[in-house]
Length: 102
Length: 174
Image (tube, rainbow over all chains, first blue to last red; front, side, top):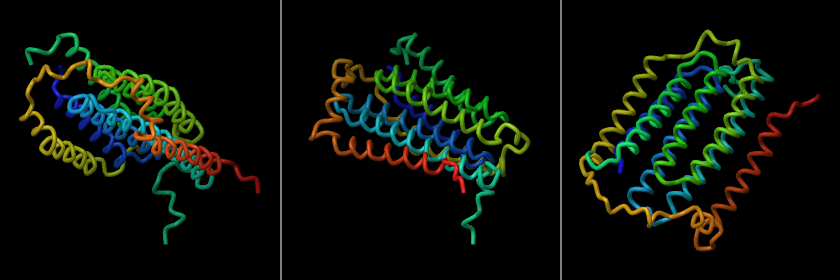
């Protein structure tokens, strides 16, 4: 079998790339894409630990399935907010959404 | 790693490269439409990793939900906003954030991956027969001793997210 740490390495690299995308991109849609990459890295971790430490339990797979649900909800609401902000501010840069700033 | 099946290892390397290459494409490309395509590539690589981890149901859900629905949602968002014309300024404070991401990776390496690598014993005892199947997952999701409450909560969350997304994105005609 492929050692567990290789999966963890890929997952950590994917998470770091996603973090960079979230922190550095100026476009709100690209920020959400970074969040999706991070969620996928977490899911690889969950499934890998399930497969290597407790394959006879169902918990790991069920958790991964719930992460899918959260990711779908997050993408739908996040993109709706971005489109709504774009309507009122004509910008997709999160820094321009400063209506609540005192 | 002498006991690793060659084709299994090759498939792992290929899927990992697809995943990470697609991810790098997502965070570096100027054109966000291409970024969405790269996102699909990366998610496809993750689906391949699920196959290697013997979770075929999750791989199918990954292709259906992520590549089939979420990536299309991103395509719509890119096209409905002016993302394609604001191509000039991609990043803010790129070096600080790049350093932060690399630091995070190093932390993860030292905290999680190196101990795992240290304690790794290639045990052939991980049997395919004991791996839970998709049928077990389905039963566990509606079992009252399993995940039925989180399952229903997830359904409510999805409904609320759907209604919320419609309400937020709806054009107000006043």
